[in-house]
Length: 424
Image (cartoon, rainbow, N blue to C red; front, top):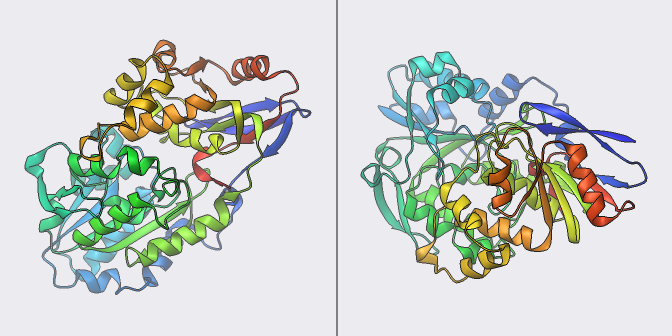
C-alpha cells in the first residue's frame, strides 16, 4: 500500500493507495528543489540583480509617494519575508517617501484585519498604510482606456495617481492566465469590476490558449499585459515557492521580462507528463488556496488533464470559507446539470459577463466529463452536493466510492498538489 502526503488546510493527509492500482505520482520538482541560500538571501539577490531594469533604489530616489501592490489572503505570497526587505531598501535611500500598500483583492472579498496579521505580521499591519482594493466601488476607480479585447479598462485611482508603482507576488501555473504573478497584480488584482468581467469572458475562457502554462496567444494574458503597461507598473518582485510555501527562487525588475524569466524557471520544475487514469487524486495545495470551492476549481483542472473520459476526480480541499462566491454558487446550484451551465454560459456576450462566470464555466466543463468528489470535514456537505459535486468526509471514503464507480482494478494517478504542476 502506497502512502502519499496530500496537502489539506494547514496540514497533510496520508492517502493510502493500493499498489496494484497506482500508476503514477505527478509532482512538481519545485517541492524537492533546494536553493543554495536562504529565503531572505534569495530575495536580496534578486533585488541586487534586477532584470532589464534600474534597481529599486534608483527608482524610488526623488519620489514623494509610491504604491506597492501585494496579494490578498487567497495567495500564499510570503510577504512576511519579502515586504520587510522591500520597505527597508526603499527607506534606506528615501526615508520620507509616502508608501501605500494596496492589497490586490481582484474580484475577491476584502482581506480582514486578522488575515492581514497572518499574512504581513504585526509590524507591517500596525505601522504601514494598508488599503484593500474593492473592484465594485466605482468611486475608487479611474477610467484608463480600452483593452485589446475591447473591454473598458478601469483601475484603482491609487495606482493611476501615484508617482511610482511596483508590485510583489508569486509565480505558479495558472489555469487560464497561464501563470500567476507579474502583470496579474494589476489585472485582475487592482482592476474595476467591468474590466475583470470583460477579461474573463466565456469566449476567452474557452480558448485553447487560455490554459495552464500557456502565455503565447493567450487572450487573457494579452489584456493583462496591456493593463500593467497602462498602469505604468515599473518594477516587480516575484518569488517561486515549494510545497511548504518557502521561497526557492526570486526574480525582480522589469514587469514583463522578469516575469518571463520567473515563468521559465517554474516551467522547468512544474511540467509533468500526464498519465491518464480512471481515478485522479489531487489537492488545491492546502491553505490558503483551499479555503473555498471557487479556488478549488484550479486544482481540479490539473486532475482533468490526466483523467480518462468518464473518470473520477478526488480533490482534498478544506473549503472552510464555503463556496467562495455567491454568483458562482447560485449559477451551479440553480442549474439542472453542468451541461445546462455550459450551454448558457457560452451564449453570454463578452460585454455581459457575469460575476464568477469563468469559475462556474470551468467547473461545469470538468463536471460534464468527470465525477468529482471534494474531501472535506470543514464545509457544508449539502452545499457541495447542490453544486453537482459529490462529497466525502475522508479520503478513504471517497476512494472507496470511486472504486465502486470505476471498478476495483481501476487505475489511479495522484497529483499531490494540483496547483503546482503543468500537466502535458
